[in-house]
Length: 266
Ligand code: 13P
Image (cartoon, rainbow, N blue to C red; front, side, top):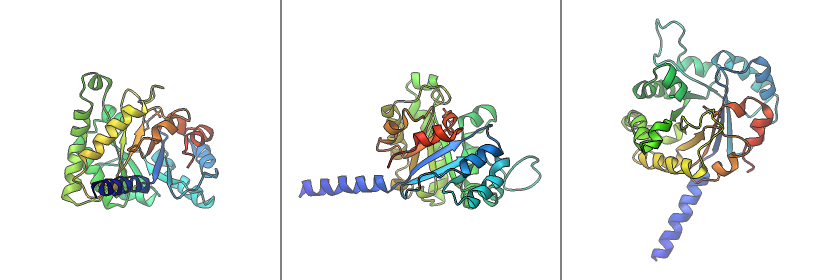
């Protein structure tokens, strides 16, 4: 009997794990132009029911890329790289969640380490941004990750826990399903460094993130994606890990060939 229950548990876990669609997101950062939009929109990416491909161009290119994607009937989804902490009003230069939605964004990166470091994005601001995005029907890709020093001082999990704490509180309060969000684990020391986390290092943190989120609805549907020097050389090994549900890609998302090369085979 116990063996049967254990087998059912393992089978359920396997099924749930494979229920999560793999998500590969390209973050162009402060790069790209209309020509790159045309190249991506005009490329026949593999259409698989188990794969979501998202491109996050600079905000000013979102709307024209959205038109191009529609014109070529391309399977790409679009995402933004940031959103205002304000919903509307006298905030010169800001872009709201509703505006991003209208421009065609289905996803939006928040809490990226570059914004945390250069633009004072705090954990609390990230939680507010998440609330605006959810209200506007845009899925937040919430980035977390530790510095090299934090890792060396065995503080990785504590840092991630602190970053996710206000996020978790909002999700619980508002009974938001984990299916509506994505978490991106991007260790700072791996971003743009050509030194990615090993699949085992990333898996350990992803597993911890899933455990941290267990009391949020539908944790089994939570997609946790890895970012930090993902390329065609390491993506398959990373994506083979049970809690790595996709990749958040910077440099290798700036050319069609390198991006196509890192997409999963199945
Ligand atoms: P790289 O893939 O260039 O390391 O960048 C990762 C990243 O920051 C994606 O958001």
